[in-house]
Length: 258
Ligand SMILES: Nc1ncnc2c1ncn2[C@@H]1O[C@H](COP(=O)(O)OP(=O)(O)OP(=O)(O)O)[C@@H](O)[C@H]1O
Ligand SMILES: [Mg+2]
Image 1 (cartoon, protein in one colour):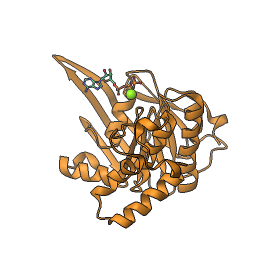
Image 2: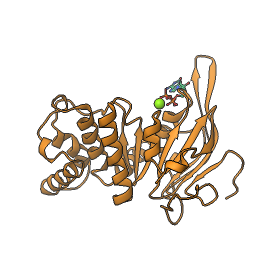
Image 3: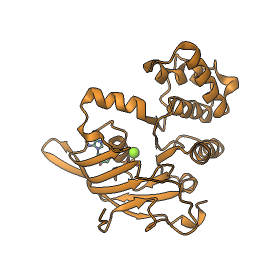
Image 4: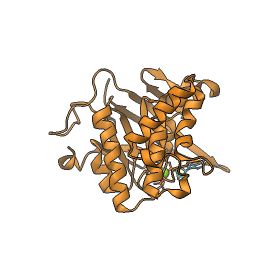
């Protein structure tokens, strides 16, 4: 593909800083081409994203930073199929999700994307086990298999001993780890995280980041994470900036990236 100024290919040799391991192979998992998005408020059209181009390879862990209001969450929501662009193509695993109707898009999202939010978004009346089981209720898995998967995933995030705790009986860091378990339990193609450490103290944030890093390094999960926190950005393999509707540059933290 031709790469104009301002385009970003995460995982491409041309922008991969020295010392950063090659993670993905084959075609990119995420291909964003000429994507634009604006919102209309009354008479006023507010452009948020303008002709965005981005490739993210399989197995990458990308941090997306930028000023408040620059459109980071908007871009994540487009990649997660929660919202649609005004123009352009968003291909995930070769499939242009902008062409899917609402029903197909909802099905695609359930099967393909794990979303981690700043405020966890757990169901307060359900315990940790039941919260993590929720996405599996949309699948054909039987009860025993669901139980096995949920227990394995909660063990993976270090909460095997908290399965019957409700969210209000867990710390913020533990709640976020339950939310991460919920995001990965159905083994999605892609993990999307919008400020996953934004509401956490430093220790809990470090635990959550260590967990995301393990998911990336050991289970080869592809992660796109928005963050304002330089420490969180350092956990990622690549850093991209969004400002004034444009992706601008990569990896000033390159020296810190593993
Ligand atoms: N549903 C909406 N209707 C109208 N304008 C919106 C809507 N959602 C977002 N915007 C506007 O789009 C711009 C980008 O918002 P977005 O939430 O993507 O920013 P952000 O980079 O995630 O900011 P923050 O770092 O504060 O979370 C903002 O100016 C916001 O006011
Ligand atoms: Mg945001």
